[in-house]
Length: 277
Image (cartoon, rainbow, N blue to C red; front, side, top):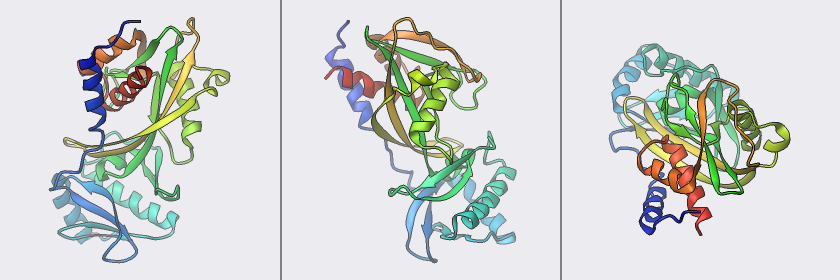
Protein backbone atom coordinates (compact mmCIF):
# COMPACT_ATOMS: atom_id res chain seq x y z
CA UNK A 1 0.00 0.00 0.00
CA UNK A 2 1.33 3.44 -0.95
CA UNK A 3 2.02 5.65 2.04
CA UNK A 4 0.31 9.03 2.17
CA UNK A 5 2.67 11.96 2.56
CA UNK A 6 2.84 13.94 5.77
CA UNK A 7 1.63 17.03 3.90
CA UNK A 8 -1.42 15.18 2.54
CA UNK A 9 -2.36 13.87 5.97
CA UNK A 10 -1.91 17.36 7.43
CA UNK A 11 -4.18 18.82 4.74
CA UNK A 12 -6.90 16.28 5.53
CA UNK A 13 -6.60 16.95 9.25
CA UNK A 14 -6.92 20.68 8.64
CA UNK A 15 -10.07 20.04 6.59
CA UNK A 16 -11.66 18.14 9.45
CA UNK A 17 -11.04 21.02 11.82
CA UNK A 18 -13.38 23.18 9.71
CA UNK A 19 -16.51 21.06 9.39
CA UNK A 20 -18.79 23.33 11.43
CA UNK A 21 -18.86 27.00 10.45
CA UNK A 22 -20.85 29.69 12.17
CA UNK A 23 -23.77 31.26 10.38
CA UNK A 24 -22.90 34.60 8.74
CA UNK A 25 -23.67 37.55 11.00
CA UNK A 26 -26.41 38.87 8.69
CA UNK A 27 -28.40 35.63 8.77
CA UNK A 28 -31.58 35.90 10.86
CA UNK A 29 -31.60 33.47 13.83
CA UNK A 30 -34.62 31.21 14.21
CA UNK A 31 -35.65 30.56 17.81
CA UNK A 32 -37.73 27.73 19.24
CA UNK A 33 -39.29 28.99 22.46
CA UNK A 34 -42.27 28.83 24.77
CA UNK A 35 -42.96 32.54 24.46
CA UNK A 36 -41.91 35.72 22.73
CA UNK A 37 -38.48 35.82 24.38
CA UNK A 38 -35.74 33.31 25.21
CA UNK A 39 -35.54 29.87 23.70
CA UNK A 40 -32.85 28.17 21.63
CA UNK A 41 -31.57 28.94 18.16
CA UNK A 42 -32.51 26.09 15.83
CA UNK A 43 -31.91 27.67 12.43
CA UNK A 44 -30.77 30.63 10.36
CA UNK A 45 -32.46 32.46 7.51
CA UNK A 46 -30.60 33.92 4.54
CA UNK A 47 -31.06 37.74 4.58
CA UNK A 48 -32.23 37.60 0.96
CA UNK A 49 -35.30 35.67 2.12
CA UNK A 50 -36.30 37.99 4.98
CA UNK A 51 -38.28 40.78 3.20
CA UNK A 52 -40.52 38.27 1.43
CA UNK A 53 -41.24 36.39 4.65
CA UNK A 54 -41.88 39.54 6.68
CA UNK A 55 -44.38 40.81 4.12
CA UNK A 56 -46.05 37.41 3.83
CA UNK A 57 -46.48 36.93 7.59
CA UNK A 58 -47.75 40.49 8.02
CA UNK A 59 -50.48 39.88 5.44
CA UNK A 60 -51.30 36.31 6.43
CA UNK A 61 -50.12 35.25 9.92
CA UNK A 62 -49.35 31.61 10.67
CA UNK A 63 -50.05 30.02 14.05
CA UNK A 64 -46.95 29.55 16.24
CA UNK A 65 -44.76 31.63 13.89
CA UNK A 66 -43.75 35.29 14.21
CA UNK A 67 -40.98 37.49 12.85
CA UNK A 68 -39.40 40.78 13.84
CA UNK A 69 -36.21 42.62 13.01
CA UNK A 70 -33.83 40.35 14.92
CA UNK A 71 -35.43 36.89 14.93
CA UNK A 72 -37.92 34.44 13.51
CA UNK A 73 -39.71 32.90 16.48
CA UNK A 74 -41.33 29.47 16.47
CA UNK A 75 -43.46 28.87 19.55
CA UNK A 76 -43.47 25.37 21.00
CA UNK A 77 -46.65 23.39 20.51
CA UNK A 78 -47.73 19.81 20.17
CA UNK A 79 -45.59 18.14 17.48
CA UNK A 80 -48.57 17.73 15.15
CA UNK A 81 -49.61 21.38 15.50
CA UNK A 82 -46.05 22.65 15.19
CA UNK A 83 -45.46 20.51 12.10
CA UNK A 84 -48.66 21.82 10.50
CA UNK A 85 -47.64 25.44 11.08
CA UNK A 86 -44.14 24.88 9.72
CA UNK A 87 -45.51 23.10 6.66
CA UNK A 88 -47.70 26.15 6.08
CA UNK A 89 -44.60 28.34 6.39
CA UNK A 90 -42.63 26.12 4.00
CA UNK A 91 -45.44 26.19 1.44
CA UNK A 92 -45.39 29.97 1.64
CA UNK A 93 -41.62 30.02 1.00
CA UNK A 94 -41.98 27.49 -1.79
CA UNK A 95 -44.51 29.72 -3.57
CA UNK A 96 -41.98 32.55 -3.33
CA UNK A 97 -39.33 30.41 -5.02
CA UNK A 98 -37.17 29.96 -1.93
CA UNK A 99 -37.43 26.16 -1.61
CA UNK A 100 -36.28 24.43 -4.81
CA UNK A 101 -36.25 20.67 -5.25
CA UNK A 102 -39.33 19.82 -3.17
CA UNK A 103 -39.09 16.08 -2.41
CA UNK A 104 -42.39 15.12 -0.72
CA UNK A 105 -40.29 13.46 2.00
CA UNK A 106 -40.19 14.46 5.65
CA UNK A 107 -37.19 15.05 7.89
CA UNK A 108 -37.59 15.41 11.66
CA UNK A 109 -36.01 18.04 13.90
CA UNK A 110 -34.54 16.17 16.86
CA UNK A 111 -33.04 17.79 19.96
CA UNK A 112 -29.82 16.65 21.65
CA UNK A 113 -31.83 14.32 23.90
CA UNK A 114 -33.28 12.48 20.91
CA UNK A 115 -36.79 13.98 21.12
CA UNK A 116 -38.57 14.81 17.85
CA UNK A 117 -40.28 18.21 17.97
CA UNK A 118 -41.58 18.52 14.42
CA UNK A 119 -41.39 17.03 10.94
CA UNK A 120 -41.13 19.00 7.72
CA UNK A 121 -40.42 18.64 4.00
CA UNK A 122 -36.70 17.85 3.71
CA UNK A 123 -36.02 20.55 1.11
CA UNK A 124 -37.16 23.18 3.61
CA UNK A 125 -34.50 22.24 6.17
CA UNK A 126 -31.73 23.94 4.21
CA UNK A 127 -33.84 27.04 3.54
CA UNK A 128 -34.40 27.53 7.27
CA UNK A 129 -31.05 26.15 8.40
CA UNK A 130 -32.68 23.48 10.56
CA UNK A 131 -30.40 20.65 11.70
CA UNK A 132 -31.02 17.46 9.72
CA UNK A 133 -29.40 14.02 9.87
CA UNK A 134 -27.78 11.76 7.28
CA UNK A 135 -25.91 8.48 7.07
CA UNK A 136 -22.64 7.97 5.15
CA UNK A 137 -21.06 4.56 4.62
CA UNK A 138 -17.43 3.95 3.70
CA UNK A 139 -17.19 0.75 1.67
CA UNK A 140 -13.68 -0.70 1.76
CA UNK A 141 -11.85 -3.98 1.08
CA UNK A 142 -9.19 -5.94 2.93
CA UNK A 143 -6.73 -4.90 0.20
CA UNK A 144 -7.02 -1.26 1.35
CA UNK A 145 -9.20 -0.06 -1.51
CA UNK A 146 -12.28 2.11 -1.10
CA UNK A 147 -15.42 2.28 -3.24
CA UNK A 148 -16.73 5.70 -4.29
CA UNK A 149 -19.98 6.49 -6.05
CA UNK A 150 -20.43 9.25 -8.64
CA UNK A 151 -23.65 11.18 -8.24
CA UNK A 152 -26.05 11.25 -11.18
CA UNK A 153 -25.87 14.32 -13.40
CA UNK A 154 -29.60 14.79 -12.79
CA UNK A 155 -29.21 15.29 -9.01
CA UNK A 156 -30.37 18.72 -7.85
CA UNK A 157 -27.34 19.08 -5.55
CA UNK A 158 -23.72 18.29 -6.46
CA UNK A 159 -24.42 16.47 -9.76
CA UNK A 160 -21.46 14.43 -11.00
CA UNK A 161 -19.50 14.76 -7.76
CA UNK A 162 -17.91 11.81 -5.98
CA UNK A 163 -19.71 10.44 -2.93
CA UNK A 164 -19.31 7.61 -0.45
CA UNK A 165 -20.37 4.05 -1.27
CA UNK A 166 -23.81 5.07 0.00
CA UNK A 167 -25.14 8.18 1.69
CA UNK A 168 -28.46 9.85 2.24
CA UNK A 169 -30.79 11.73 4.51
CA UNK A 170 -32.42 10.05 7.49
CA UNK A 171 -36.15 10.47 7.05
CA UNK A 172 -38.54 11.33 9.87
CA UNK A 173 -39.44 7.71 10.64
CA UNK A 174 -35.92 6.20 10.55
CA UNK A 175 -33.00 5.62 12.86
CA UNK A 176 -29.45 6.06 11.48
CA UNK A 177 -29.01 2.26 11.44
CA UNK A 178 -32.18 1.71 9.40
CA UNK A 179 -31.25 4.53 7.03
CA UNK A 180 -27.75 3.11 6.47
CA UNK A 181 -29.06 -0.30 5.44
CA UNK A 182 -31.73 1.23 3.17
CA UNK A 183 -29.22 3.49 1.43
CA UNK A 184 -26.76 0.62 0.97
CA UNK A 185 -29.36 -1.27 -1.03
CA UNK A 186 -30.82 1.67 -2.96
CA UNK A 187 -27.53 3.28 -3.95
CA UNK A 188 -25.09 0.36 -4.11
CA UNK A 189 -27.14 -2.85 -4.28
CA UNK A 190 -25.66 -4.20 -1.04
CA UNK A 191 -27.95 -7.07 0.09
CA UNK A 192 -29.33 -7.08 3.65
CA UNK A 193 -27.12 -9.91 4.95
CA UNK A 194 -24.04 -7.82 4.08
CA UNK A 195 -25.51 -4.42 4.94
CA UNK A 196 -26.30 -5.50 8.49
CA UNK A 197 -22.56 -5.83 9.11
CA UNK A 198 -22.03 -2.03 9.00
CA UNK A 199 -19.98 -0.71 11.89
CA UNK A 200 -20.85 2.66 13.49
CA UNK A 201 -17.63 4.65 13.80
CA UNK A 202 -18.58 8.22 14.64
CA UNK A 203 -20.40 11.39 13.73
CA UNK A 204 -19.45 14.64 12.01
CA UNK A 205 -21.38 17.90 12.42
CA UNK A 206 -21.51 19.85 9.16
CA UNK A 207 -22.48 23.54 9.14
CA UNK A 208 -21.98 25.93 6.23
CA UNK A 209 -23.89 28.60 4.27
CA UNK A 210 -25.07 27.58 0.80
CA UNK A 211 -25.14 30.59 -1.56
CA UNK A 212 -28.67 31.27 -2.75
CA UNK A 213 -30.10 28.30 -0.81
CA UNK A 214 -29.76 28.85 2.91
CA UNK A 215 -27.71 27.19 5.63
CA UNK A 216 -26.67 23.53 5.68
CA UNK A 217 -26.67 22.11 9.22
CA UNK A 218 -26.47 18.32 9.37
CA UNK A 219 -25.29 15.55 11.64
CA UNK A 220 -23.54 12.87 9.59
CA UNK A 221 -23.69 9.40 11.14
CA UNK A 222 -20.69 7.48 9.80
CA UNK A 223 -20.43 3.75 9.20
CA UNK A 224 -17.70 1.49 7.77
CA UNK A 225 -18.47 -1.67 5.81
CA UNK A 226 -15.86 -4.20 4.69
CA UNK A 227 -16.71 -5.69 1.30
CA UNK A 228 -15.37 -8.80 -0.38
CA UNK A 229 -12.74 -8.15 -3.05
CA UNK A 230 -15.09 -9.52 -5.72
CA UNK A 231 -18.11 -7.42 -4.70
CA UNK A 232 -19.13 -4.80 -7.27
CA UNK A 233 -21.71 -2.15 -6.23
CA UNK A 234 -24.72 -1.67 -8.50
CA UNK A 235 -27.03 1.32 -8.18
CA UNK A 236 -30.76 0.59 -7.81
CA UNK A 237 -32.45 4.01 -7.62
CA UNK A 238 -30.89 6.02 -10.46
CA UNK A 239 -29.15 8.46 -8.11
CA UNK A 240 -25.62 7.14 -8.81
CA UNK A 241 -24.16 7.07 -12.32
CA UNK A 242 -21.37 4.61 -11.47
CA UNK A 243 -18.71 3.49 -9.01
CA UNK A 244 -14.93 3.51 -8.89
CA UNK A 245 -12.61 1.52 -6.63
CA UNK A 246 -9.51 3.47 -5.66
CA UNK A 247 -6.59 3.39 -3.25
CA UNK A 248 -6.60 5.64 -0.20
CA UNK A 249 -3.82 7.67 -1.82
CA UNK A 250 -5.97 8.32 -4.90
CA UNK A 251 -9.02 9.08 -2.76
CA UNK A 252 -7.00 11.68 -0.82
CA UNK A 253 -5.80 13.27 -4.07
CA UNK A 254 -9.36 13.49 -5.39
CA UNK A 255 -10.52 15.08 -2.11
CA UNK A 256 -7.84 17.77 -2.37
CA UNK A 257 -8.75 18.29 -6.04
CA UNK A 258 -12.34 19.10 -4.96
CA UNK A 259 -13.93 16.16 -6.79
CA UNK A 260 -16.16 15.16 -3.84
CA UNK A 261 -19.32 16.55 -2.35
CA UNK A 262 -18.42 18.52 0.78
CA UNK A 263 -19.97 15.97 3.15
CA UNK A 264 -18.41 12.94 1.46
CA UNK A 265 -15.02 14.64 1.38
CA UNK A 266 -15.04 15.00 5.16
CA UNK A 267 -16.29 11.46 5.74
CA UNK A 268 -13.68 9.98 3.40
CA UNK A 269 -10.91 12.12 4.91
CA UNK A 270 -11.91 10.84 8.35
CA UNK A 271 -11.69 7.24 7.10
CA UNK A 272 -8.26 7.80 5.54
CA UNK A 273 -6.91 9.37 8.71
CA UNK A 274 -8.26 6.55 10.86
CA UNK A 275 -6.55 4.02 8.57
CA UNK A 276 -3.25 5.90 8.87
CA UNK A 277 -3.04 6.10 12.66
